[in-house]
Image (cartoon, rainbow, N blue to C red; front, side, top):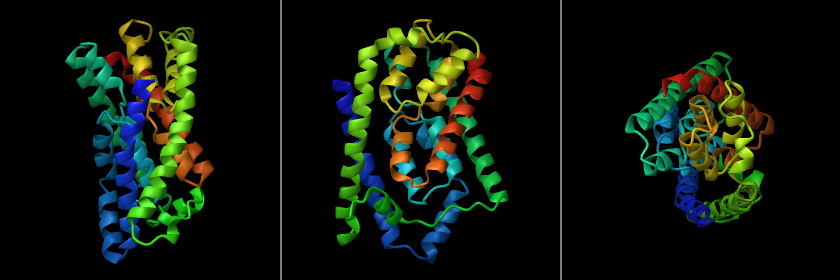
Length: 278
């Protein structure tokens, strides 16, 4: 429980920096800014995959908010989600797992995340499905925070940060208690060493928006209770708190569900295909 509190508190600077940046972008929106963002979006999946590889669940949460605010594309968001490793690497490191194992996991995730991000962006561009312009107003309308009544960018950013942080603390706290109550024994019954069925189950576990899931997954793998493919599947789908923030900040529920299902399907398939590389 202490680790959960620490991880949750570490989100605060990421959230505040994210909403401060969004407020600043909206306050200074203009032609030059839009042209800069358009150029940045062309390499977004590359930057997103590299950023997501940093073992910190705040990255995916920030990416979800940036997506909801129209700053990044769906390809970049999914690249971040797929490359996010959450607490997997720190646990493997503390357990003295081979360095080669960690390098393979990170390398595989980054390569696949970059490829998927660019393919999705290209496909949506072909369909002429363009992202909306930067708009913090949509975030305000969804959360009913009334921050537009305040002048400047600091107070609105603080309001958004507090609102999202409280939401995360409540939902993730409930999940943390549930995992603690049921324990790892329940996960052992999921046949995580069975080919393909293990990837299906592990991919679903990875979608649970809590850092504890990646910790348990790493321990099960090191204990021989999870196959390499299942480990990769849970790692591909394990985007930390990113999906939780996405569902809270993005108004388009159909879009959110599509992103979740895409991440799950890709995670299961990639996990099954890349497990033998570990």
